Length: 291
Image (cartoon, rainbow, N blue to C red; front, side, top):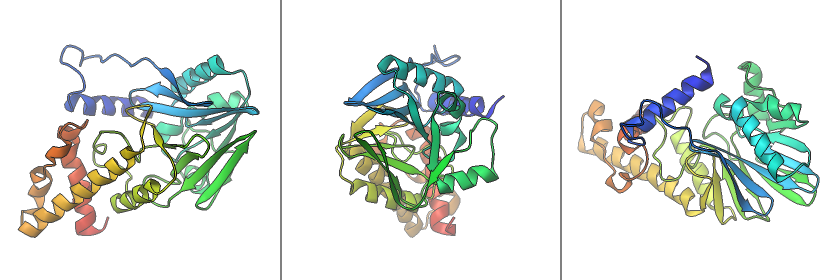
């Protein structure tokens, strides 16, 4: 079984545990139909369910953000071709995780230059994957800007938070950001927060919330939503940390804390029952061990 198929299976199991599918369909859940959503003139979200990328059509060509896997990338390219026949100029990787940047060969074959933060590129050199095309060009530091025709995309790096070289994309004229993994609307964190530094995640969200934008495009759960979802994600993490700290202060036995912590105000969020104890373990270990 390939890495991407293994990850897809894991995501399905978590969804099943969270009650996302009924018993009648749980054996073989239907794959959601991909759709293209125009978020602002020339700015689009494409995908469904747990995978949405973004693309911008400019007068000089198309910029794509993330490719997920080969099948998704091919479907994304086909969707772009229904919108425009302008050349694919860039594919930008959001960060180093294979489940977001496999399939780049599809866009490379279509003529795209692949771009990533230097931190992601360095990691990929040390951890190559046959499914991931290394970036052709890199950018570094906290901010860069990609100009294509009359359009601008700000590339923002907030330091350590999730993965390596995590990039948040801001579209100034469209007053929109596209963020990958850092904000998933109305969903608790995935599993045990793999490759997250929770404190740094909180810091990043606070800094993101200070940016000038009106709406958020996501990689998971929905194509687009209000800017308040950034603050919602931050509030969840802070509430989780506060609840764990309260149990420590009460003297609750360490090993019992993850199953003791409850956040009923988030009980309606996806993954609450399945993932909250794993979320709590991750934050508890960071508090207790600094890891």
